[in-house]
Image 1 (cartoon, helix red, strand yellow):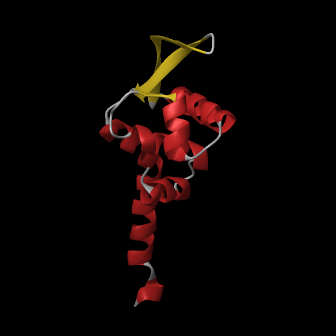
Image 2 (cartoon, rainbow, N blue to C red; image 1 turned 135 degrees about the vertical axis):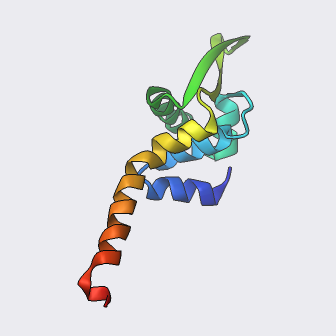
Length: 112
């Protein structure tokens, strides 16, 4: 897990556990929920909520694996979009606002 990436995603408004889970999946490898819990250092309910949030955002997808664990089917999670598309989804709303702020600061009479 990339701590700097996680803190940057949180600054942009992403929930902490969502950012931690997304960071674990950025290598493009399919991971199970127990893998993610271990890598992110979070508990099962936190991972479950984060995975569902990221699925709802369209960032990741869930696939049923052929394995069963404790009588329950095991699922694998992986990115549903290219990293560049996820980046645009996260940063897109802020880009216009940042351009506007930069323009206003540059054209403000107070800078003279």
